[in-house]
Image (cartoon, rainbow, N blue to C red; front, side):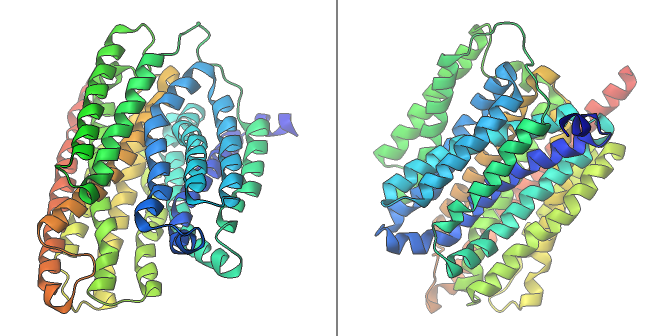
Length: 472
């Protein structure tokens, strides 16, 4: 059976399916837990400020560890780290399900996130290594579809599971998925030890990077709640930036750095990550505020809000593989730039919505956002991952995922800060509706500007593509 799979002409697609299991599990669990927060709050007797750490601890841990596990995988082998990712994520899920206190749940969510970062930092690298360039965009597009489907099914599945059983079951559902995924890794993924030379792990770089990212993200995520001028926030941001500066200085001196800074002299790698990070800032500004507009202004029921929020990932799930396949023939520049322009158009459309918008009137907004994201993500990921050497695929994938998570965090923090600065409140009273709409529209226009900036950066790939063609 083993030889049959590895000798099959479709072997690369079996690898893709294995990677997709890990990607789906990580994404599903990220979105499924949000639905359970009110129930967890009442059963574990937690207030909102403590409860947010169930989500924040997961995000902070993943973002801080992605490049580290990317580097470790390049040294020790991607199959080994990917397999450990399944084990740790599944173990963390079991412990989450048995949590009796809120802080035990937060701690086990950190364990889950360690496993998730092992999976997420290696998925794009494994696919890029196994697929030829002519099929790479299509394969990465399918992974983009899996990400969208994980986001799509998470809230709906979570609601059904909690209704039928309990919130603990949303973690226990990962056990069979994790076992199947781990078995598939052992049977299907190719054995790889990319670097035969003995390389020392950059512990100083790993520490300064992890501490720096944790401190900066802690300051960003709590800036609005604690006050941007408060000592904890300013202290976190300053300590974080100092640590990141030390990290950069360290990486320039060590023989085997955790992150090869030379990657950022690689123009398609730099352009792809810059435009990708900005695209997530723009998208998550809307993702954060749209539910408050739908519930606080239009008084929609949660089921109606859910239907509207599902449009984005549904459209993205359809468009992403098509765009990825097209990028294998057309190249990344046209599709990525067009996708970002459509995203900007979607954000502008949201800025035109009124206090009496009908259900039908809202639908074009998330459709445009899903179309734009679907067109952009697959070709951009393919461009980024195809621009690095095979020995650096995992660390490149880790950086790519890191930038995505940073974009999400910054987009949420920026949108909330600007929204409240311009007089918006999350659940407005009748006399506060106009202030809400002014703040909401203003934030959407800022997000549109960020998407346009990302489009300009993405368009600059054309010079690189021309130069490459001339050199060939």
